[in-house]
Every structure is written in structure tokens, then in C-alpha cells.
Amino acid sequence: MNDPILRISDLHISFHVRGGEVQAVRGVNLDVKRGESVAIVGESGSGKSVTAQSILRLIPTPPGEYKQGTIEFMGQDLLAKSEKEMEAIRGHEIGMIFQDPMTSLNPTLTVGRQISEVLIKHQKLTKSQATARAAELLTLVGIPNAADRVRQYPHQFSGGMRQRVMIAIALACNPALLIADEPTTALDVTIQAQIMKLMKELQEKTGTSIILITHDLGIVAEMCDRVVVMYAGKVVETGTKQEIFRNPQHPYTRGLLRSLPRLDHKKDEPLVPIFGTPPDMSAPPKGCAFCARCDEAMRICVDNDPVNYTISETQTARCWLHDPASKEGASA
Ligand code: SF4
Image (cartoon, rainbow, N blue to C red; front, side):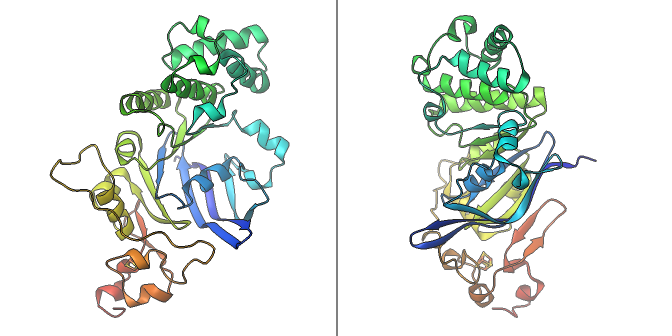
């Protein structure tokens, strides 16, 4: 049996701002198994990045607040850890790749030094061992002349190469879990494809689990085993990649699939945007948060937050359309 390496249960995260409390994450449940790639998709503000950052406890508190729930990683409760204990986990057991490598890399240190520091800190390598391993890692992520390039600074690398360096740093300690938050958004399409291919290959080699935050369904189709769809701070649908692409069960997922380009997109099939905007999370609606934008909304949806319905062993959808009563027209 493949037990989850990560289990998030009933996670609630708010931000206290001048206008009040923004409820960014409202009861998220999420499991990731060993060696599995899970995509979290949703519009901006859906809570996907906040959820991902919370795993590494990167949410500043204040203004953020972990209000409720647990994040269990390999049997450890991450929300109960001290900052010092989290520092030992970040970059060692859990790696993270951010959207913009230029803001994550230190411009004043050579690339080799930045990789070596992680190895010296977490793997207790000597300086010369770490430098040699840094060059090996650069080669592994497809950077030519690695022995020379370890001595260069981030500005001497192209955008795609810098992202490869970030992947090398994230993978330096063979993390059990890699979190990639929009890792290729700033790159052009060809480089995006190369980086995603590289991540997939490295995952197959190392068995690392991946959480990929993205709005690019083409990348999801290429990379991931399972998809988690978030809307207004909640998981509204989960399923295998096949279930989500071929048989979506939540109107928001269907809207996303119609509105975003995919690899199998047919030229004559127009993209249809989801009308309206997500709700104000400082005053989330009482009923279904998607109600004002949903063309299948029923009376029950206005005042009652839908429960999570099991569609298959691997698929769930948080929508009243799956309530047996709605099929009988009782709630319309
Ligand atoms: Fe639409 Fe109602 Fe389902 Fe919400 S619960 S997605 S409003 S049908």
C-alpha cells in the first residue's frame, strides 16, 4: 500500500488586512503519495499558492494565520514544528521551485556557491565535495560546461538556464517532495517544454513526489497523475488526470477546461472565458462560492455550501448537482 507522503487535513488560512480577514484557504484536504505528481489548478486567488507555501510554512504570520487543520509530512506535523526545525526540512526533505528564478537566486553569489551551500548545510559535505556535486547537478539538469559554469553568477545565465539552476538547487538533497509553483510561467514555450520534460525525467529517476501549481492545462496533461481543482479557497474537484480531462464533474472544472488552451486544443474550437469574477474572500458567500458564475446553479446553491460527493474511488466533486435530490428536481 502506498501511504501518502503528505496529508493536508481541513486546512484554514486567513490573512488579516486593514479591510478585515481574507479567508484564503477554507478547509483544504489533500493527499500526495510517494512518487506521485499532483497538479493544483485554479484561477488567481483560488488559494493554490497559499496552500503550497503553507506546506513549507512560508506564509508570514502576521498578516497570515494558520487557523485550523494539520499538515502531516512523512509522519511529522509541520504546523507544530519550530522555525529551526522547518529550516532543516526546507530544501532538504521538501524542495521548492518558484516562478521567477531571478528573485530566488542571490545575484551576488556564484551559482556553484548557491548549490554548494545547500549541500554543506543539509548533507554535511566538505566545500570541495559540495563544489564537485554542484557541477554534477548542473550537468544533470542539462547545463553544458558545468565545471566552468559553477563559477558564474545568475545574470550570466539565460532565463531557462536560471530555472534549471533552481531545479538543481531544489533537487540537491534528493527531497521526498518537490513543490513547483508556476515554474515555467516566465519562460517561452520551447524552454517551458524542455524544463517540464527535465522535471519529469528527474522525477522518474529519483522517485520524488511533485506538487505542481499551474494554470497551464497542457503541462498538467504532460506531467501529472492527479489533479486538484481549487476555487475560492476550497478544493472543488479532484480526480485522476483522465477523469478531470475526460469526465469533469464540477461546473467550474468544465469552465476551466473550456477557457484555457490545451495541447489537444482544436483550432476551430474557440476558448470560452468563465464570465464574472471570483468572490471577495473577506466576505465569502454563504452558499456555493461559484454560484454567481455558474450556469447550472439551483436554488439550493445560493444559501447552502455544497458537500463533497464521491464520484469514483479517485474522483470527488463539491457540487449540489451530485446530490440525488437535485436529480429528482427537489432542489430546483
Ligand atoms: Fe453550480 Fe450549484 Fe454546483 Fe455550485 S453547487 S457549482 S452553483 S451547480
